[in-house]
Length: 428
Image (cartoon, rainbow, N blue to C red):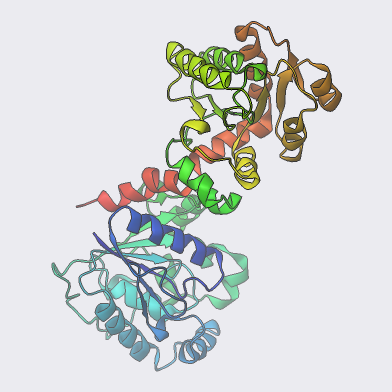
């Protein structure tokens, strides 16, 4: 589909709506849609996501500001209608061959009511006179003029002027202010349940007719993941994984990795989405380590852990730099150290710096670091018992529970799949 995203401005202009719009544009483009930005200020996001600049749709354009000053005092200036007509024609040109227009926040705030009126005029299901207080002489340039003369309009509301006290002094009964509280036939989307309730009451429409599509987090950008980490993550899916256990050790027998695999198998009977990530390469000084690695891979197959026990040594044959290891500490839910022997135990310290809970063997160097704050088990412990320790601690940890719940629902990829993509398929 051909989709246009519209706002007063787009990045690099800084703002919450600008940031959300940029994420939407990138997601839509990645999904194979043809995406176009329409704004007064900003830059194109990429060659394949161009920007059409329309100065009159800005919130800071001099004519717009002059008209807004009059509107804020309850006066509709003589040139309001002329500006609305100009913007409507600019939009018609910018939206040629567009299937869906997604307008962010410009039809719920009074920053540029001529733009709001213009978008209403491109929405065919409600005539001008059906908007409260609209002057009978107002004319709409029609038809829209796309390939099928039909433009689907989605109004994406982040804020609502009529329900926000700081805007009330600028709003008045009648046209054009009532555009912001009239349902004129577009599809409404809001960013939270609160906004859904507010908009349903404001527009006098069923609450279930308003879609809720929350904002999200770009995990890679938030964590500032390195290119190497991103390339590794493309090889496996962490979207639903929980807990993510990190074992940052070399593949040598003294690290007792077979206990980690057996404990993971037991843990997955309690927490079915649990995974283990082993970051280290083969031990550098003992040729027998290759045989040990094969033993671990055979055990992984025996325990049906092929998709949940991840050895990064299978994906990359070079030494992982410190920044990549740090990335995996940020991605993990807990440190799991089943070592039979350690001289010190730097992963315990790194886990503390990363605020990860620690599950480790009760050997002197690790106990000296973890004291009473780590969860301990014997190097020869029953894997079922170790799994029960991990599950009990994490299932009673509100910070872990919050992290898992929100990261499953509020990454941009998840939001696109659950909320944005279904909207595009409506009425096709």
